[in-house]
Structure formats: C-alpha cells, structure tokens
Length: 413
Image 1 (cartoon, rainbow, N blue to C red):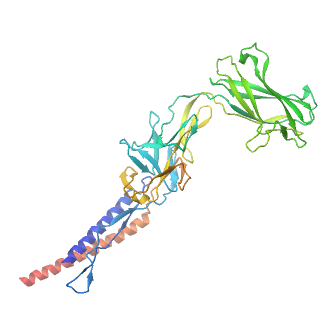
Image 2 (cartoon, one colour):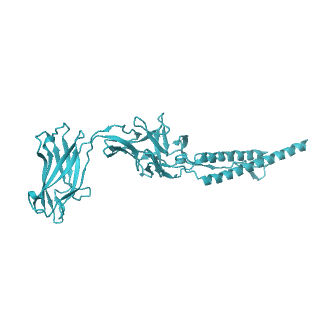
Image 3 (cartoon, one colour):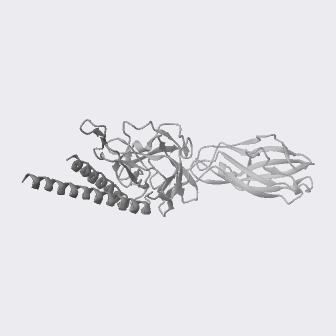
C-alpha cells in the first residue's frame, strides 16, 4: 500500500525536524550560534486508476534553514572579545589557507602575537604601520606587538593653549613663561620654555628656548630655537601669524646623541580658532599637547568599539595596532556550517564585501562583548511538541495500515 510509504516519509521528516530542535536546544548557550528552522515540502501527486483523483505521496526530506537573526550582545570581561551588532562576519583563515567566516568573537593572542580563534584559525584584518592602519589595502593575518618596550616616537608637532594678559604693561614686566615637554628619537624628554613679552598694544613677542646643556653648550643658560611676533585684534583674537600659523622649531644638535628635533608649533586649532588669546585675565596656560612618546612597556591589548585593537603602554599612551575586517554577503543563509562556530562559502554564496565595521551595510563591532545564541527556547519547545505529535500521528497511520494488511491476509487464508 502507498499509504505505508507515505506515513513512513512523515516519520522520517518529523524525526529530522526533532533532530533540528534538539540541536538548537543543545546550542542554547553557544556563542553566536544561529538556530536552524525546518521547512517541509510535499511530494508530487499522482492519479489513481486513470481517475481524476489526486493523491499525495507523502512528504519529502525536509530542508533545514539557518536563521541569521541578531543574538543578544552581552558584555564580558575578556579584553579580546568582540561582538558584531548588525550584518557581517569576522574573516578567518584556517591552517589550509581556506577562507572561513564566524560571528563568534572569542579571540586570543598567542606567544608570537598572532590573533586566533579558540579553534586556532587566524583572524584577518589590517595591521598598523607606525601607528597608522590602511584599511583600503588587502587583508592579512593579524599580528600584534609582542610584550616589550615600544620604540620611542620623536615629537614632530605640539600645541599650546594660553591667554596673555591684555592689561599688562609693555616691557619685561609682562614676561610670561610656560614649559613644554618634547621627546627626542631616543625617548629622552626635553623641557622647552615658551616666553611671551608684551611689546605694544595688542602686540607680543615670543621666544622658544631650550637649556644650553641639552644642546652641548655650557650649563646655566637658555638657547633660543624660535622667535617671532604675535598680533591680536580688539576682541583678543590672534590675527598674525595668520592661520594655519605653524611655527617651525629646529634643534639641530642634542648632547645625548639623538637625532635633530624638527617640530612645528600649531598656533591654530583644527577649527581655525587661535590657540592663543589676549583677554583681561591673568596670563595662564590651559593645555599643552605633543605627539611624541617615550619608550614604554606594553601592558595590555584590547579590542575597542569599531573593531580597533588598541595597545596600552606603561606611560599611559594608547596606540591602534590593528583593525578587524568585517565581511558581508547578500545571502548568508547559503553558508555551510563547518563546526567551531565557523562557516564557509558555497557555490550559491554571493561575493564577499570586506571593509571596516559600520560601513557599506556592515554592522558595528562592540568590544569586550560576545553575541549570544539566537535560539528562542519557547519557540523550540512549541516546535518540539508539534513535531512529536506529527511523529505520533504518522505512527498511528502505519499501525492502521498494518491492521488492514493483516485483515487482507486473513481473508486469503
């Protein structure tokens, strides 16, 4: 009887669906796990005895579809944990050089500085060169700095925000001096002195000086390395030098053997506003900034928001050492799971679009967080009951067919 094979296909289909539910529930707490749903399809109908009576042949083998919906992003204590909020995948390379994808951002760094998944796959992105990340180039294996001293970075630019007292009398009594620390190529610190003297109404002179012993001269004096004049308008705003107003400062010889210092003092901010003002307030410095850095030990590596991997050094300086790449594709449901929270492309997959987080439709990366499973336990238990009833119903059909078969055999006897 065809009814037997029809009911048997129902048993098989519901059994596969129950397996999918069981797998989903087993991975309820698996990082970034994406639940499978089961799609049933009927078999083609046929005509019985030439009559126009259509009868089905049962259900075909179900298709399991992976649901790539967003899982809950949960904060962790792991400095190298990362979660994707939105579309996209982290890009990986396995030992055979095969390209893999994952949304599980449980990363670790080995002794050589390589960024790996828990399964040992290499994480892809862009490494920094001299602190600069070029995300327009090809991705590569991420390799972070090993523990040790960071190479010093000589100062090439610094700025000074200060007010010069407009009520001061002209002459030496108006002298205002403020220190500025700069770093040379060996990581040594030098203290420059920026001195300002009022020369007339709304007019000041400046003189940038360095201790004489630091340039190989007799100690006890200051050597001038840059001089000039400043002009302010009636509102206390600097008008000369005009923007961008960068003062070139050169120290050709240093007593400690470091490379010559070639620096620029920025008198204007990025918005075009002058950093120096002349108001009827006491002369004072509000901020000093410079881009040099002394040698320092690396104390921590962490993934920040946006997928930047930041190295923190003992001197408090933080440097971007790498950038995670995010790959996106139009049809993620075409991916094939290969275990270990990883996926690979199939012949049905669209081309990968790689780039930085939060660009081109790619999701953002949340540092020190992980994406949870998207399994809905209530839905899975509901499905389990439905599939169980379906299995039981088809088993009843088989039992009924068996009784009919026995009746026919008894008739023959």
